[in-house]
Image (cartoon, rainbow, N blue to C red; front, side, top):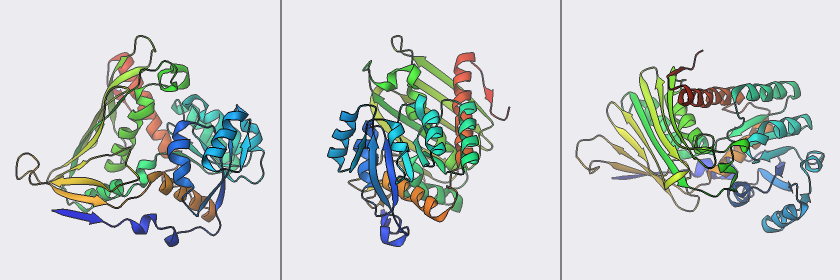
Length: 353
């Protein structure tokens, strides 16, 4: 049996358009911005992207021409000095997330920063202090929390339709052994946990709606790059567990399994949900072997990057706090820090301490 979830109420701009579009600037010509985030945001009447910056003016101009952005700047400082820009999107390498986001907030801009928003919890605390001092909104860009498939999965858990949530399991991997890629450079914040392990952590917390008591991590490091290329982790929640494996050097794959006492949910493409076709998950009570008792739920085509940009733009126009503020990001960051400690010291790490 197939059930289709209508997402038009989520993605139709007429239902929630802000009073006037927020004017955005983009810091860097990073691939994720050019290929995914910027084109998605430009589809929204809530958003007007007016400028893009790079430390190389030629790259900025090429990106501006490619994307149809009016203004190109040859430095981040020039873009931040533009009085027309209200908000910036920061997809810079991980090691530049906090320093440049602080600079942006101090320049009077709201900030949507790619994940992980910081390299460690103390660094993130500096960003929180900057947010409080400047009064600017700063949010971590976890687009998955805006996708209807995750919203529906959490709703099913809350309703009790799958019984009591007891376990979630994730796999997320791709293959990248290019030495020049920033994901393979430790000083830039490369490695599997920072890049893709963040998603199982944030979504397990999203589903359990609590923080784990303790965590255990196991990591294997690339002998050439020094980055973690294979990570296995266990998060111990009150009444349940989350586990995941992620890798930057395995066959590309992703899947989420959510186990309740009555049913399980399997999300087919949990993290890089396509924006050109419907997505789906399966609910199964296990009454028949081989998934034959599973029912399919499909979700109308939508773009989670657009939904993320629209949500932050509404926060700006309405003066509201993001649903997941930096305090939530700090809790996520503490788990990442603890997993690194666990792998280094070969022990459980208590999150509360």
